[in-house]
Image 1: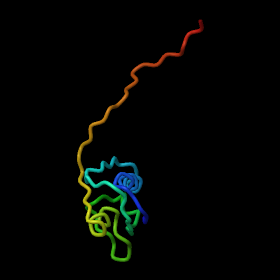
Image 2: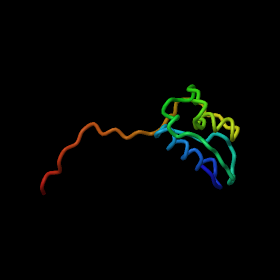
Image 3: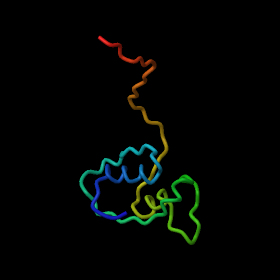
Image 4: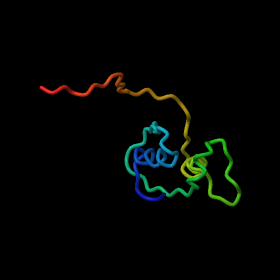
Amino acid sequence: MEGDLTMTVLAGWVRIATRGRDVVDKTGLTGSYRLKMDYDSREAMRGPEAAPSPDRQPSIFTALHDQLGLKLESGKLQRETLIIDHVERPTEN
């Protein structure tokens, strides 16, 4: 990944690379940053504790820390959820 990105856009890239895990930008950094990060996108499936094999690029978790100085922290996220508990077909008038 390379380019001029905001932290919000970077969080979106991390979400994609981690197969849809929610990622929230809590850096407080504003503006656009020129970033270059090399990582093995397949390693994201193994989780942040998994060490990359020596012949591969690092996982996104390791690359964020080692290449950008950022850290992913696991946590719980509250969000609004719409629950539909009943559905009926409309009747004819």
